[in-house]
Amino acid sequence: MDLTPADLPDDIDALKAMVLAERARNAEDAALIAHLQLLIEKMRREKFGPRTERTSRLLDQLELQLEEACAAATEDELAAEQAAAKSATTIIPAHERKRPVKKPLPAHLPRERVVVPGPAACSCCGGSRLAKLGEDVTETLEVIPRQWKVIQTVREKFTCRDCEAISQTPAPFHAIPRGAAGPNLLAMVLFEKFGQHQPLNRQAERYAREGVEIPLSTLADHVGSAAFALTPLFKRIEAHVLAAERLHGDDTTVPVLAKGSCDTGRCWVYVRDDKPFGGTMPPAALFYYSRDRGGEHPRTHLADYTGILQADAYSGYGKLYKPARKPGAVTEALCWAHSRRKLFELADIAATARRRSQGKSEHFISPLALEGVRRIDAIFAIERDINGKSAEERCAIRQKLTRPLVEDLHTWMTENRAKLANKNPVAKAMDYMLKRWPGFTRFLEDGRIDLSNNAAERALRGIALGRKSWLFAGSDRGGQRAAIMYSLIVTAKMNDVDPQTWLADVLARIAEHPIQSLDALLPWNWIKSAAKAKAA
Image (tube, rainbow, N blue to C red; front, side, top):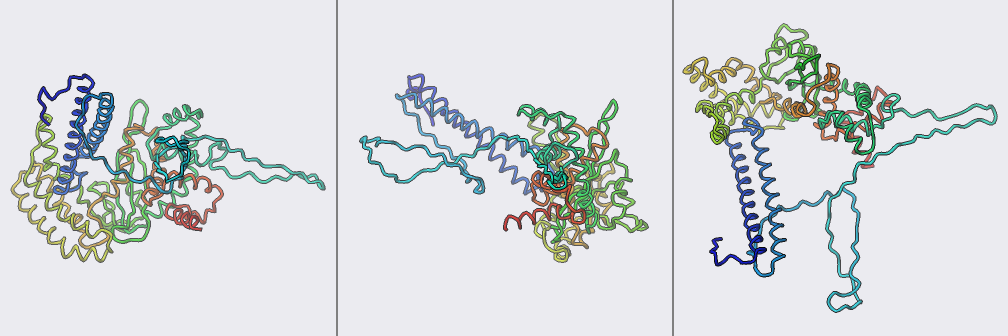
């Protein structure tokens, strides 16, 4: 809207209101720009492949900018309305901004009715003969602060009038021996530490502010005792995972506190997920810890395994694939997402544009790498359509649709690789695939094999996020304890089970639960029994 000096009001309050209204419009424009940038980035994702292959931070930054812009626009709009209300001499042009449609609050939450008393007399004529016409209900989401309580378990003693013997009911089992912490408290501490990445010292500080002082050493004792109590469940998950026909394997770094320094340990994960090829067995994740990345560790983890291992090209897995291995060779299946990433880094147009806008040196954008990414993305597009089908259906579709694309990719890579110098980055990215071509193409013959190893990378994501919070593991024993808890928590999440609720119930029951029926406490069986109990 174009304004001339004659259109401006003389009243100071009215001028302030007009300025604030204009600021609200500018804030709306900023929010719109951020939203358009987000849409553009999503469109680029569809063009160049999975979003995580470029940069995991850009989308988060755009969402944060959009959030801040919307918040600023609302704040300025309310300030403009307040200023306009104070001025009765000037009419500020109406400003409308589309607000997001509010979703209804969850229906399963309990409702508390707070009835505001109605008027005692008519506001128009003052009459007292009022009849209820209806009511308007406004719902507000509220939360009750965490409440602490002490449960007193009373066991009465009785004496026999005939023989003078004393009788008393046996003491109930505790979640941990001689422990004063209930199962819900233990589950909360464990999930906060290993699921929400909150170290025990921060938890102790928060509990103290709530009026409950629990020494750090006591919390550490609770964690050690609970991990020991849950170890039998870890063993059952271990047996379940290692019985799979196909596993996803990966590892990540774990800083470990050492004398005078901080060493770098490793956390290994093996994921069983049969859903992509129509399997009915529940998914699960198995974590191990080691002080280094030596190849003997995966060989020890998979000592009796003879199925399919989907992983990267880490040389430590090499001896698992040997035909002479006892009890048998593991089938190698390499990850196309890893090979695509090497090409994508040389064809990341968005990253180059950002570096240019920041005044940094630009990355070289290779047309060959861009063409390689385009060809691989066409293969991934077919895989997305057959996800969840049976292994036989997947294999048949791959033979018909995917094999020609893979063969064309091999021919194209071979021809163009011959034209490149050995030190060329694109040549190195092509060699990564060409030198391991049988491992990359094995998925064409076996419908159980996935195209990527993303299942293992998703399982490790929590550790990558947690490193920024807990900084390091306190010892090797701490790393092993963390591997047990990560196995339990990640497995629960994979089965759509709330880890904290499940841990609380398991800790309350496991001490007196028959060892021969321990499988009933596993997440996929636990949720079935919970559903039956709820239905009953």
